[in-house]
Length: 372
Image (cartoon, rainbow, N blue to C red):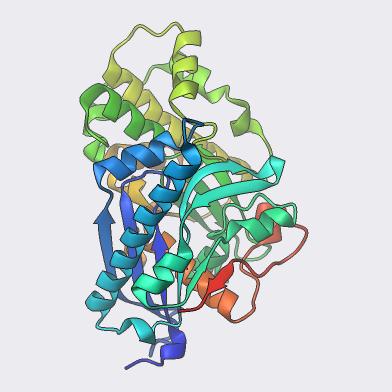
């Protein structure tokens, strides 16, 4: 049995609102790797919870009570996922030093000095019988940072090489990049929508929550005029540090862009154009801030969209665009592993943020600890 002092768990439910990913990792593996994945699980959101979390992205009637109830429902799913992951890893919950449980972001307003992740970490600790580290973003924001993205520090620990310039492209609901030069400081920022608009448009027009492999987008055509209108969003041209979420990229934003463009075309052409928007904004960010990179490592749910991945590769012909799976790290596990790692840093009293990424005044130990 690996030393219990090195076994950590990570739980993530991202902007895509598809469910909960949980991992158990050993950070003292027998190899020279940073960590070894011991077990993992995915628990899908019940449709009622997904709908409520989506509704809570905007103000509504009795939202405090609804948010508290959603937090309890989420906590129960987090605990279930953690226990299932422990079973898969053949690890007892009490052998896990701590679980990093991010929570579900419903508002992100760093310029106003706050962010909100729905969660009930005390309930998770009680039901999963393990120490929980949560509320990771608040301390960075208190230090005048964006509070996001936080995963670049883990990307650097896992993927940085002294002789190769890499970029990690994390394509979740929102997309972000981490620049890992062979020499120099690590940088990173949110680039804009990943899957969030693609999923929204697919659900609206086909009642299907996502575009499987980008097949629907492939049936349409990218409209250059519409793409140009979408790219005019000021966020894309803003200098980092920067972060974003559904506060900006939501149904109202998309409907406004379509109305201003006087769009009268086919729904599948919008899907194709939105796919191109994700690829173009990722590529533009890489060209602007990591133009000499050798390799782009993609992770997150977006890597399953083969149309999107093909567009991204076409945008970056001088770079090798591959998934983290090629390095033995499952693309769907990277973010949950990141929060396991950040929980480990928190327990050790080490900083988990990168000021060059978030804009914080300095390194900060992230999160609040809820003992089991």
